[in-house]
Length: 164
Image (tube, rainbow, N blue to C red; front, side, top):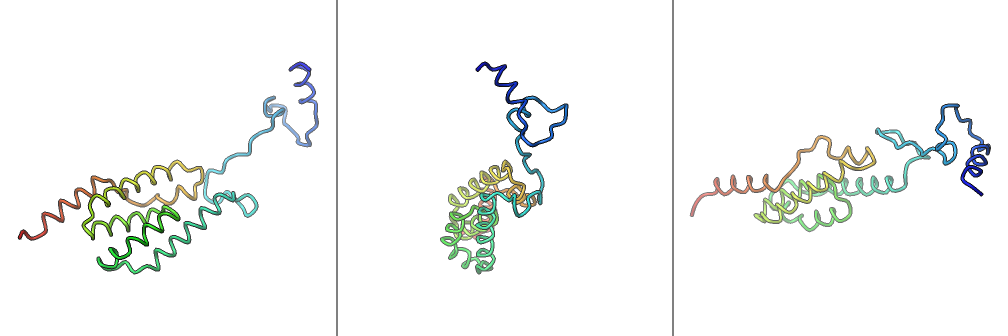
């Protein structure tokens, strides 16, 4: 069977859809892709992707655990470092990165704070390229940490510390 014969058969088939006269032959033959949602709330209960549901569930669990943690004092933040790292393994939430950077700074672990700032920046870049607007919204109003910010904070702390 030649390509012309195949195209005629394929375009003559009734697929049950009413195609307007200006429809591309490519879309008539192969079907049109479903449009990608571009805004929050475009999904309903039936069309919500399973992958996104799982990501949002994990993000919610991590955020709830973060809110339950005692992080008000410097010592509490330093003591919570292992828990914060575990939360990041489950879901890389930007607020957990923020808290971990502060905890490392409080502990005087500057290299680890720089590493966490770098990882937070990379995660931010990943989130901004997400296909899901619900994920992109994670970093809308958050300030970005960079390793240079940690260096500036270190210089400020060291300048304010009394000399012995």
